[in-house]
Figure (cartoon, rainbow, N blue to C red):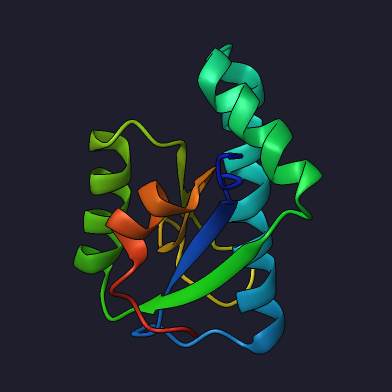
Length: 126
């Protein structure tokens, strides 16, 4: 009997209490996704590197969810870190629509889906 294949994903949490154009929102989501991958590449963490390879081989599943406040965004980030997951917290530079220092998104993973769900599973899709 074969073991079920482990699924991997990345979840990006986006604040909905700040106004961002669709383009700005897309850019912030991309920043969170890419920064989380760079974090893994720079970490030298063997398990994270394996997760990244598996996620990539499975098609790089990404899910975008919403949070209602900066506090909720920070809770997602802190919980992911507490569980040992790669997580990126994006702070806007303030060149366009938002004041400098505005925290906009958090990327969690790529990591095993069941671990990511422990952090983001209760959040609604954007």
